[in-house]
Image (cartoon, rainbow, N blue to C red; front, side, top):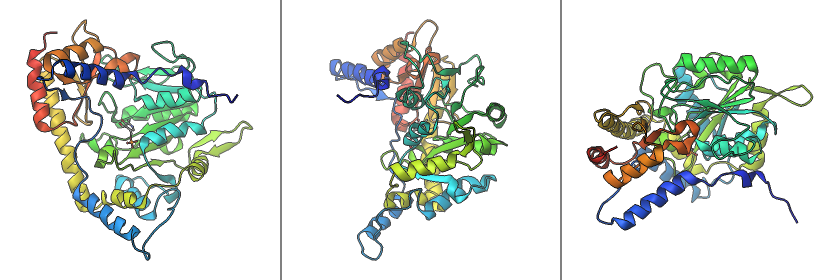
Length: 409
Ligand code: PLP
């Protein structure tokens, strides 16, 4: 009988969104006359912008014509997109990336989930807490997280982020091989300054650790000086890979395109002591297991970097961020302590004294018919907090805030 990977059996069920969906559905069925507003959405809601659609249409036409048809594309992305990324996202910020340091993929989720294949089986992993669950679960599947105790993984190093430390994680106080950082952060919506990020880069250089930097929400940064890329920090090229996505930047959650940067300077140690470039390993992995993103989608992604594309995606992001502002104001004026939502589409609020995050979920649903996400679902330090998102419409977001007056807790 073939054996399975037992690590999968250690994973707790994907309880969070399944449970919020279950409770919401039950409420809706019991109260069909009370429409619910969803501020738990982690997906974009506005359509692809015209510049993107037009580029995709033209590429589809090319695929239907013998002279311009394309089969398999380059393993790591078409030149036109790789060069648009280098010029549009990096060169202008003083970051010079080599052509073969950019890897186009079908998603940041895939990349942050797959990158762990390059780490030693017993590598020690640190994550900020609360956390985007993919970093944790992908390492748990590979057996690096240890055992699930019901609240945490006993072999992971958690770096708590809370009101007390201003949501700035401490560097690990034990040796670790890899640190996952996500800024702007999901779920807290907070960012790190260049100086705060430098502390991590310096720590990683000193301790020969790797930083996996997830910048999926970088397009939402508007505060001057907040780094859009970890490579704005001196020395980061030696210790960091960076995962970016067109999903939240340009509405590609259903279209699928992303990219990861793996600088040549990032090196890890092999069992025999030799130093090996992660870039070479990632190339090998991508060439072996991935056949590229479709041509029309890569053309669509490249259109994001045209002047029209930039103008159009910025308008969409501004609309989402107007919602974030409304949520921040709505909560603050009602006495809540609110974090994030300035440089990210996520708003993280402190639940009222003595009310845990699931009770707050139930109160918000039953009294206001508003759905959010309990912080406890994102890790032990998420208890006592709650996430709302800016991805609903302006009208619904406004109405959701007005409904908060019905809260009693
Ligand atoms: N990284 C973070 C922090 C996210 O929140 C998400 C999606 O919600 C992703 C990555 C997924 O990105 P993609 O759609 O490119 O797979």
